[in-house]
Image 1 (cartoon, rainbow, N blue to C red):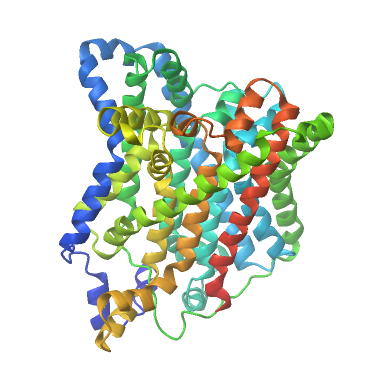
Image 2 (image 1 turned 90 degrees about the vertical axis):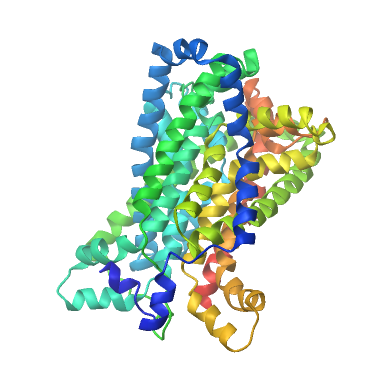
Length: 526
């Protein structure tokens, strides 16, 4: 059925659209090369440390029981956590977008809402409710509930724009509801599933705060401990090398299974909404399952926050850093989101419009640094700025650059999915009518990918607002963000003082999630 989904264009146009061998524009290729080199600075930093230390010193540090334990924890976290997030995200998206689910608009918001609750705030809520929570089970619980929206959102957006005639054709051929889902719907979600799964996996590998609070050791928590004690010592570098190798394996797997299928559609049938299936007797079960999911992902953290707000009383809100933290968080997160979209756009354009080995290599390079823990990115930028451009040390520019490196996959996945669904034939038609390439892209392609831009910016902004370690190391003296202030209070077990910062973080993230929804549904209303 996949061939059917990608062949709605006339034959002549389809040949041009599907051709992946078109030669990349030299200027675009050069720009993406510069971006790739820039974001690979942390990888170069790790490599330089390794080179300075030498393999004889590193080998005993890598091949030791503790590394094996961390490897098992991190791998199990990814191997179990990613399928859980994909199953929950795709299942929720299908229920909301393709069934007659009672209150489906409310569920659509509630399933995306956990994005507004940072993973470390969710972990803080769970630890407050269940102090004994820990280990692999605790890590999977907290991480899955925090990160499944990263799959749900792109899956829902893709399902919403699927051509319903393909599903109708499958039904006319005798396929049942499950047959239609597995043979027609699921293959068209490949980009959303693999892209979202990759982002979830990278977050699982780089997450620090959520796992540190429940005392679950991963490579990232061990690296942070090592760097805090020895500052780029050989043991931390050895762990960073192993973590980078795990990320590389994930990137290769994602790139090799993504495929070359095209998902853009043009024609009279592309804008018709899909038919919603009745759930019948399964409706109460679906509502109960979604209710339990929302209760675990939102109810427990918010109930714990409420408990600590009551315990802290009005005094917890009389903290002089609260107002400053709100303003500085908004400025840094907004700057990071804008910069990440600007940097990710050329990479996504090259990957989608001129796919090939070079494009995949350059795109993959942008993921490698993002997979490293934020503290390694921060230490790399500290070292590089001090040695090359001291004027940039501990400035807002360096913080924003760190956000771009860390959160670029969020922007890249959204932009790549949006560009893949923007028919290039429409742009070619505009050029045939006398428009220049740039004008055609601005007037034709840009409106089509605005939802993807909005989604990517919102995701990056949310991540930047919650970023901890890079902000602590790179921000100018006196900088206070909601995340750093929350972490400072919660690390000191001052949970009541931490609660106002967590509440403000959630309130600040809520508009971004709302923008994400508005942008993604513009096309549906149009």
